[in-house]
Length: 147
Ligand code: DQA
Image (cartoon, rainbow, N blue to C red; front, side, top):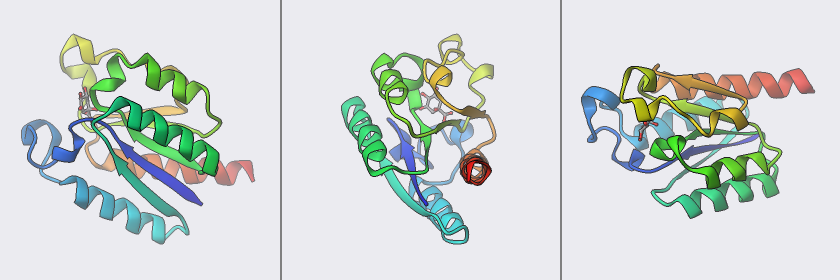
């Protein structure tokens, strides 16, 4: 199994960025954690982070061409308004699980809407970095259920 761990804008600053909201774990630490979780589950984790909408869309399309098992995706602020990313997900066959570190529903009103959620398999919100682990487990379980 190959799984894409995809993080959107500003998530390269994890650990430094608003630590009261997003915690002290860095992106590198998160990626290492998920890679090692993958190793113990026979899954190869491919990590990618970008601040650019088009690069994220390219990566989603590429993951589909390669035929990855699933995508763990934190779209950052693109969550709330990127129809281009939403269309990219709608156009691929790979299951996407949307992850948010913070509880977007307890924050500003603009964060309450996700244009990504309707085209995702599911959404994990407000559980910190653990949300990424849960998304990984969900993708593996989903794949097993379909075998
Ligand atoms: C976020 C929530 C978004 O509203 C915000 O723009 C982010 C991070 C989260 O993980 O909680 O960049 O996706």
